[in-house]
Amino acid sequence: MRPRGYKRAPLTEEPTEKTLHPNYPFLMSSHGLKSFDSDDDDSNLESNNDQFAFNINTKFLVDSKDVSIGEVIGEGSSSIVYKGFCCISIWVKERFLIDDYRFRKLIPVSVKVLSKRTCAVSIEQKKKFQREVLLLSKIRHENIVQFIGACIEPKLMILTELVEGNTLQKFMLSTRPKPLDLKLSISFALDIARGMEFLNANGIIHRDLKPSNLLLTKDHEHVKLADFGLAREETTGFMTCEAGTYRWMAPELFSHEPLLIGEKKHYDHKVDVYSFAIVFWELLTNKTPFKGKNNIFAAYAASKNQRPSVEDIPEGVVSLLESCWAEDPNARPEFKEIRVTLTNLLRSLCLDNDGSSSTSKVNVATEDSTSNLIQELVVCDCPGLKMTKKKNKKKNKVMNMIVPFLKIFKSCISK
Image (tube, rainbow, N blue to C red):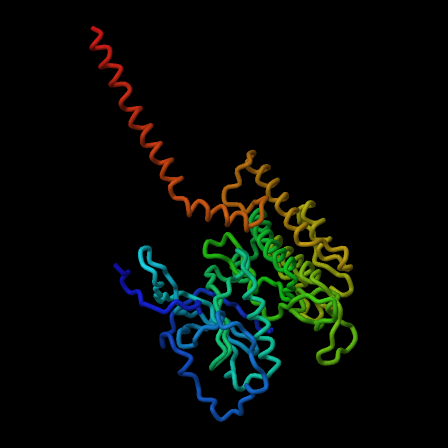
C-alpha cells in the first residue's frame, strides 16, 4: 500500500557595516508570510542578465515559489535576512515497489535576500553571490551553518538552516557586565576553531570572523559559523585588502597609505587566526575589544601592534591569545594546533573542578567531529544493539525475582 500523501514521480535525478544576523528569534509578522511574487514591479529596469550567466548547479537551486518569508531578522547595506520556510522535495523508495515516491516537506530556513531584483543587480554583485553559493555548497560541518539552496529569480536569495539560539554577540550582550563561565568560553572557542580548521583545510578564508557572524544553537551549548559573504578560496596571488570588519581585522589587511578602489594585497588564512584571537578575548572578558575607539582607529591601533589587555585572564590562555594575534602572520598557529590546545585546556579545567574525567555537557573531544557523527549514525542504524541490551536487562530482572521462589520450592520438596 502506498504511503498516504506520496506522489508518483518519474525516476529522474533529484533535482556589510550593518551586520547580517541570520537567525534572531522569530515572531510572525502581522501580515503573515509573503511570497516573493508580491514584490514591487521593477519591469521598467533594463535587464543586464545577458551580460552574466550564472554557473550554479541546478541541484542547488530552489524555486522561489517554494519559499515564503516572515519577519526581518537582519539587514545589511545590500541585503536583508528573514526567517522563512522552504518547501523541499524528499524522495522515498517503497520497500516492495520499484517506483520512487516524492513528498513535500516544509522546513524553517534563514533567507538572505539581495535588496534589488536580479535584473537590477550589478555583474560584480552577481559574481559575489555565485561565489558565496558555490562555497557554501561545498561545506558540510557541524560547526558551520548548513546550506539549503539558492534562488536566482526574481531576486537573488541564499537559504541556510535556521539556528535558533541567536548570535554570539547578542548572547554576550545579554549577560554583560558579568563574564561568561570559563569552561563555556573555551567550549565556544573550541567550536569556532573546529569550524575554522575545516574551512582552512579546504582552502577557504572566512575574512569576517566576529561575534555577530557566529550563531548559537537553541540550547546555547554550541556555536556555528555563518555569513560567508566575504569568504573566498585562498590563492597564492593577491586578494582584496581591508576585507572584513575593522575591529576584528588582522593588521596585514590594513594599510596606512590611501588605497585605490579594488586595490589588492597578499595575505593568507592566518588573517582568520587573528580574528579568532579577538573573538576569544571577547569570550573570556565579555568586553568590547578596543573599547572607546571607533572602528578605523581600532584597526590603526592593531596595525601599531596594540592589543586588548590580558589582565585577569588565566596564564595558560594568555600564551594562546598572544600567539594567535602575533604581528607576524607566520608566527600564528594553525587552527589544528589551536583546537588541540583548547581541548587540553578544557579537559584540565574539568579535571580540576570535578576531580574526575567526567565532563558533563562540556565540549571536550579528542576525535574530530566527523568521527563523532559517524559513531552516532552507526548507533541509529543498528537499533537492534540497543534492543538486545534492554532485553537482557529485562531477562535478568525476571530471573532475580524467580530464583528466591525456586529455592523455597526446593527446600519444601526436600522436607
